[in-house]
Image 1 (cartoon, helix red, strand yellow):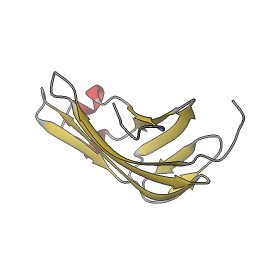
Image 2: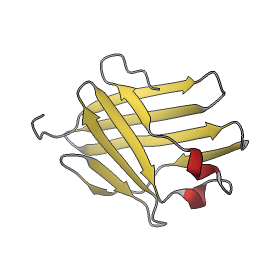
Image 3: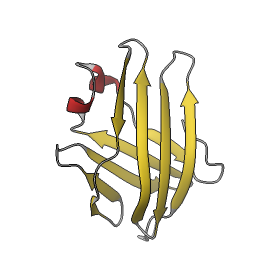
Image 4: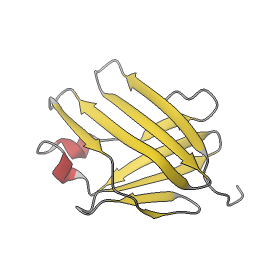
Length: 114
């Protein structure tokens, strides 16, 4: 896959059969983040993790958003999908729930996430 600036625009939400849910708003143009937020709800823990890191941003080939508290969001493309992954964000979650936070996958063509 050629290295190119990331372009994606989506506003999506999903809930699986176990109740795990996520919402994401992405507006990234030429690797510049214009809008980003994500929330993950974990039913077994009855807790939510929400993140909108401040714009300490790196780009190419992926976009990295790093907040002052160390929470980092990496966003990269894999074909027609864009992956939103989280690291060091446990402080933004109820105790023990960050272990259950999975990446959010956005389908670039449909704008849906899962």
